[in-house]
Length: 272
Image 1 (tube, rainbow, N blue to C red):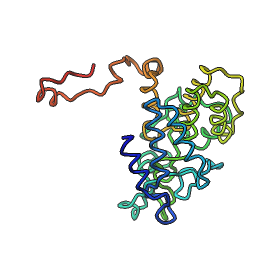
Image 2 (tube, rainbow, N blue to C red):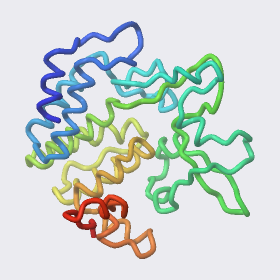
Image 3 (tube, rainbow, N blue to C red):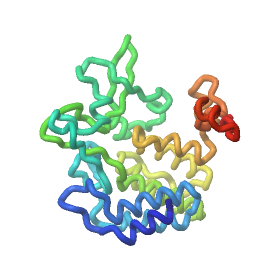
Image 4 (spheres, rainbow, N blue to C red):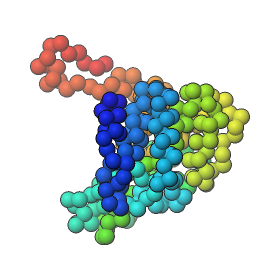
């Protein structure tokens, strides 16, 4: 993947085609490359790639959280346009799948109580990116980053890559190079945008790591499986998920191989 992305970065234009960000450009490639480097614990290169994206003045953290996932978002690096169903009023599959057709109905997707409890008081992300509803006298929350189930004209695009993730990537890369103050500065960019006070500069490395894990959990909630990949790559899946999922064990972290595949290839063994 690294070699392919490097080649793509060299060949692709840095300009977007048209006024929208629905075709990848060089910064989209570099943003994905930053994530790949992060997953491989290549901290120096992850920082370098994220820094390139953050330094590009075409992108900025949207101060109004309700605008982050609009098709006009300045935070978006790469978005997907819903084409085939846009004439039916579908903006994004997330909005169509999560937002109930009837305002009083229950969403198919519910945020875990432990996740809801993780938000600090006055966190704007809870106010704007979660939506409460009541079932049997209990308040539940659904993801509400994409707010349009159907509507015309189309106002929301599916956001694949956005600037906030790059700040969090750079923070983790810097932290693991013992650049603690710089890491805190990046984390605080995200916290302050969410209406929260900055983390103190006196925090130690272990405390910053836990704070960063939490910021990634809340900032990237419901986007592209980030939480799962984060827990697995940092060896945190078992200690975290075993407290909220009954009988969760280490074998649940691995993707099972289908029985039919095992039958056709005697050299394979089950992931357990």
